[in-house]
Image: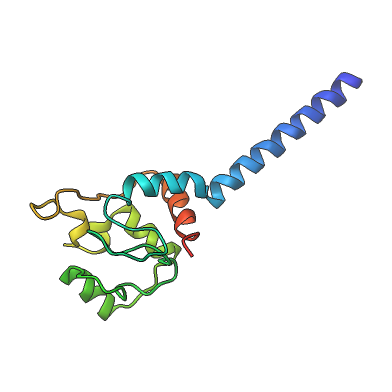
Length: 141
């Protein structure tokens, strides 16, 4: 009888641990997102409160910021979309962008290779990694 109680308790603890891990993955991990941002975004974007544009616009306070409001020479395609269909960089739009920037805004400069832009961003395949990155971007306040 005691062995059955111990096994039941162990099973409950394992289920609780799995629930916590699952919630963390659902919520996103800002530390993982920070490493992803440094490796994927930091080459072109400033993510500090200095708000300096680089090859790309700064990302400080990007979350819930209207698209295209930063003083930056965005591509014509990006400007057109931001003017004709204004949107905020919220979870939905960041998810679309990070999944497939060319699919979201065709002809966007960020996703193209050229002499002036030798590094392109094609998107992040892992939905967990995108969630982690978005969670990190929300901390840039």
